[in-house]
Length: 234
Image 1 (cartoon, one colour):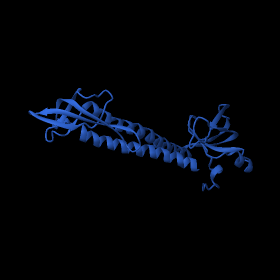
Image 2 (cartoon, rainbow, N blue to C red):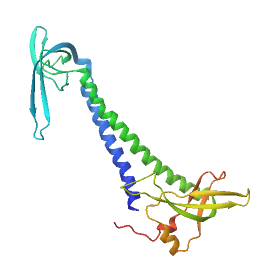
Image 3 (cartoon, helix red, strand yellow):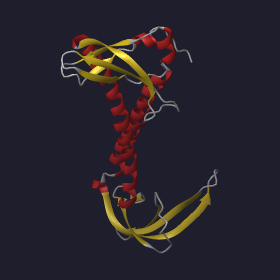
Image 4 (tube, rainbow, N blue to C red):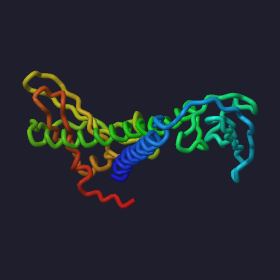
């Protein structure tokens, strides 16, 4: 179903965005956080120039003066804090090979946001992909090695705890009376992205195949009969 494909696409997008942000973060880490060639010093803010960009956002250019081996330098800082003011002394560093290049370690830490957010996206997307792949393998394994029973169709319910693209999936509920222990077992299908009630009625479906393991706690309802003749071209 289209929504099921969209669900997979969403996890892939999350994982892709996460991977890109993590890579950007690692590149930034390599370029910014290599302090082996950087020397700490004290700088003084000499000028804060404000201007509006084409989208009318206010931006600031901060210029700092400092001394390196008796020589005065004035360079532009790569960022701005709201508590900056002209004449304020701040902790900065400069590059030994290029003293005009400066930065602040406290500002550098902000770039860790990129790999941090990227890792979150990667975990969410990767987990979603892993769960879907695992479910497919689990269902295949049950169909090959599990016990096949037929459970009576009970009802169709809307799964309001989960939504993709503004739509809720459906689950079918089946029940089976085990003659060996005289217990009733209730089964719920995986998410179905069409309302199966009309198909169940048209095909007069009263039972569904269910594959179960030995302890009955793991199972998979075979719902292929509901989707085998459907081609979703939306």
